[in-house]
Length: 336
Image (cartoon, rainbow, N blue to C red; front, side, top):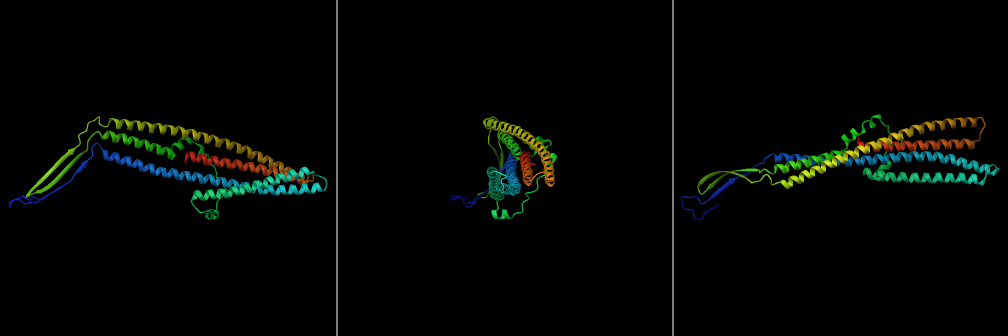
């Protein structure tokens, strides 16, 4: 500052320097830091949830590709047998040993299998496009990738043990819900702390027209304890809502884990039964082949027996595909 009426004994200039030092009361700063830490953890869990969902989608796509690949090989073998049957029926018809109806039926069965094979090949192309989209890679790169489509995942016995506990410990959506509850709790603590005013200390030094003056200010906003009653009530209600969300999500996860576990156990039992049935069909085929070698049956009966084995292999492969899919779904429920 400058005074234009200063005499010769007084300096016409004045300078002042002061600072404000805020002091948070009732630990408001630490409460806010805790709130930001919860927000950070929620963001990290959201990223983990997205990554897990992407992994789950890719696992399902690879399993579908594995099944289509097995189905293609089985259909190719089935078509080869049906072509032989059509040829044999054609030869038999020429010699009067088979009717036109039998030949037409065998050709129709062959055409049905060929149409199914074309459909499977088209589905594999669609799944390749889907996998490329999920991986974020060009289609030509995915086509050149070496994918293990033969090895079935070995189901560990421990995955079905105590599924509820595993799900409740690992699920990122539940951990996000818990963090949101903690955030609501943090907001309530902050609103309670806001009832008490913060303090500000303001030391300063001034040079005023030749005199040196020091000062120490002390300030704070007057506040009443009932000032934040509405905000505190809203924060309490928000906390209760988050509690209800956590409890509902826990119940949903437990029910989902039990349902998928039961489905997987049913598929395992069905797979055991189908494996035993397939072994009996193989035994029957061995007996049929022995009869053919002994000249008791013709090649047409032997080829039909081969077809029966192929159908059984297809049913077994489909059950294995369903079991693998159920395993992937269980992994998704447990996020393990």
